[in-house]
Length: 503
Image 1 (tube, one colour):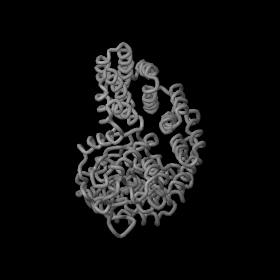
Image 2 (tube, one colour; image 1 turned 120 degrees about the vertical axis):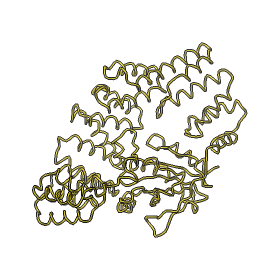
Image 3 (cartoon, helix red, strand yellow; image 1 turned 90 degrees about the horizontal axis):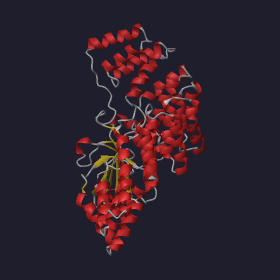
């Protein structure tokens, strides 16, 4: 459950452009006369959902008079489900903690209301009460066993608590709900999150058989992930998959698949040229391949070009290209290749690290100092007080699903370090969600120190979206930024922290 809301988007970044500082509720928009008319429309027919929506919109969801009015209506009409549901829905959509008692009131009146159980699940996630959220999902599925949404989220919720049950429920989704996007989505995430290569291939092949990627965005996403897996392992099969996708009537002009095919073709063509000893031509061929962000192709091309440079006797070129990549996105694989070429240049490990840090220092800059209110204590947390420690900073807010999705992966790494080595700070950018924060920390068990954002004082610690992440060295310099951590790259974050500690 801790990783669940990231299911809502493949990329998984919740922007703050649409939310200003997070999910800010609508302000009062109506004149007194308009609000009075909207209130009368509600009283004329309490079952009129549009009337409720208009009244709350015009008066403002956070307006105390609106709360007082709904409390009055609820008391006067104790058997009405529509009245508490309308106000609960508005509060829930605004991601406000005040939604919970009204959602619970709806369930008291209508114990089989699956939609409300689903909202209570999301609300429980915001409170950090993942077990309660899972129970709400169970009740939602019982209320409507034919609802693919409820079944999908319930299956997903077991990922961190019962991996076998999670696997079986997700794998069975296409058969239980044939032809639905939820079935395709279940296979996408099951493969995406598995660290077992055989399982990943099995699930991708099932998606390939059961869904048309030209009609299903989740199936198309699965095939894109399959391509990224195949390219470094079997470029010829990757090319075949790209050709298959481009034969689909709906994908013939698809830019991503055209780029995927081009990359595979360039890699294969480059290898043929290298085998013939035409290394310069191979490098030119590889450099002409499309540059696709968030794809395995970047690493594949980097390795192929390094091999070609080395074959030409240009070990320095191989080393330098790997060095620039490693300085920003370190992996054991790339470091191993660097060591291979460094050896040819007479460089030992200390020399490699010196080169790495030369690159990093060229872009590092002092982080804007902050001193922010700490939710867990009466004092403040200041960057100046953290000197001598590596500092991991993440901008978040309780309603941010991608943030909650990333937290378990951060935890898998940060718990390897002592508090004298690493400070882990979470800056909440949605002040209206303050009531969620302390319960979220206490119930989730996450180890970050939650502090309250001051937007006008961020300086160069810019919050481009939520989550936005920074790693700051022991002297207070930003060294790493704009990175994400998931189940497949824990080691990258660990290498970043280790090298900051060893600097």
